[in-house]
Image 1 (spheres, each protein chain N blue to C red):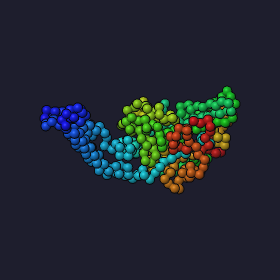
Image 2 (image 1 turned 60 degrees about the vertical axis):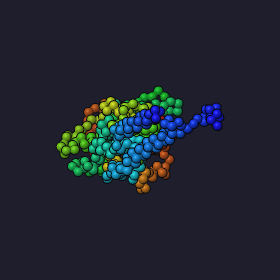
Image 3 (image 1 turned 90 degrees about the vertical axis):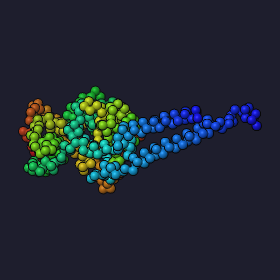
Image 4 (image 1 turned 30 degrees about the horizontal axis):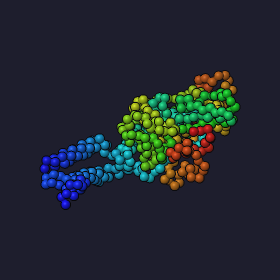
Length: 271
Length: 154
């Protein structure tokens, strides 16, 4: 038998006394890793066993489980006055030259179309001459679509962009490192890097207002009810009713970002 | 026993590594991070009180300016919030209760922002070609000479 052992190097003797063999090493390794696993499991359990502050944080008076905010824009009603853009700026202190919401004007003919948005529509729109026969013209308010499957939160490398349970996409300014990946990821151009804070900023649907029972500032000031704000979790909500029963559209549906801003009477020219 | 020291060294290194990771994690990851997803949940509460609402709505204006409030509510501008033509209430009444004069824009440009006839406005919305509507080029407070901003129908 000893001869065979020497000829088959694969079957080495387990261990000479005092030398850790493979079996012993594996056993030690197993013990160590079990210990490490137990250590991390304990750590996680400790972190998880503290849910009280979480409940307190999300409730207070406002409970985000009771709401699913939504937004509706009727493009046939917009007069392009820019009140919404000014209200947004005043309400949220949006830096000059940047817009959390803006209004676009489409002047459309059968062969050509013209789009403008001077200063985001902040001071209204001037008259315009186009070098083609325009058969229709309309205004389209734009803003963050608060997409349910949004690319902007997916690309954030530090977890600064997120979507709340009540359906609002927000930016944590304390975590944002200003890399602007989200600015590039947004297909609607709804985000910008603030020259003041050097972090990404965007429409929050006036989260500081809607959590107090108020409407977003743009909806509050819209003189033609072009902009409407609703709650999909309220059964008697008029906006929810329109979204449920009428033919609403979303921007860039082919991107599958599931926008939560709905449009009535959108034109094919609008992207 | 000589080779057992290798195992101990590896074990020590492993434990030290785990300790560094664990301490680093505790120090670097904010407390509420990951509660509801890969974000700092504390920020939701911070966003709720990031600032006080600036716009208060017409009812709040009506508390002091009853005459104008009633006139507006019964006229053609009933759907136009006071804060559209004036400014958010927060610019006028500060959080501490102190007052600041409300800026009042009496220029024709304020009216023109909604009522100048330009491509894009819905046909049924009241609009005027300023140059034809007025006697002469639009300037100054031309609109207010005939119209009352709070109830503009004549």
